Amino acid sequence: MKIIILNTAGVPIYEQIKEQIKTAIYLGELAEGEALPSIRQLARDLKISVITTTRAYNSLEQEGFIATVPGKGCFIKPKDSELIREQALRDIEKNILSAITAAKNAQIPKSEFYNIIGLISKEETYE
Image (cartoon, rainbow, N blue to C red; front, side, top):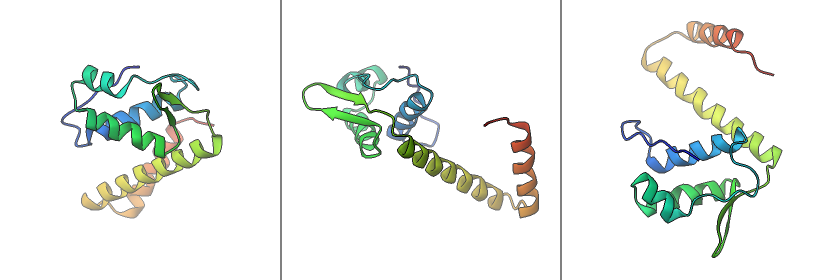
């Protein structure tokens, strides 16, 4: 598993770690039952605080993506399709709210904003 930390991203490091692990789970790069690096090992590899990696792992556990087995480590939980769908919907809502805020700040009219969304959705193919 490769995690890339951007100090200039404007996103907290723990959040970057969490989102990259979630993406790897969504894409199947991390399989059910697979062990994550230990908190200390990940902190060492990324040259960050153990507190930061702990916060990322705790957040992933609260959201139902990983389980901690005392003395053994953290493991990817079985995919609960409903849980993953709900998380995906929350992520989509967060991104849409971000786009709306950016459009408001740039004083882009709603009609133009909706046109942009329409154009992008026509260009992207998903099922």
